[in-house]
Image 1 (cartoon, rainbow, N blue to C red):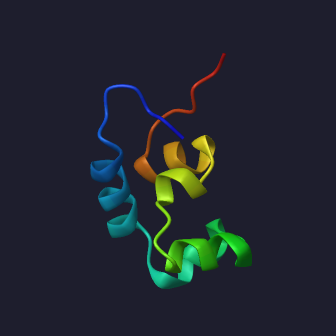
Image 2 (image 1 turned 135 degrees about the vertical axis):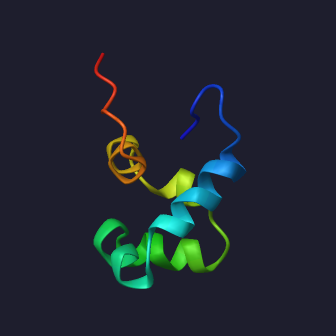
Image 3 (image 1 turned 30 degrees about the vertical axis):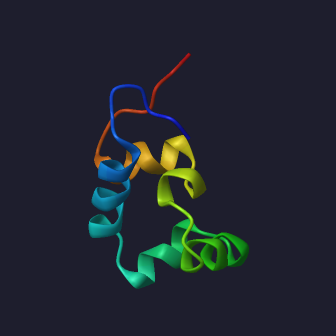
Length: 62
């Protein structure tokens, strides 16, 4: 997922700091968890709503 105006690596680092190992299981499916452990970015794996929730932002409405 691309978030205009933000560096995906910075967002990924922030998301990793916000999520503990336990919380990862609440946000990621088993398949996504495997992809994450294989090096996939949380920015690519989490939904926009989950990212907004974790960062404490209001969800974007279209």
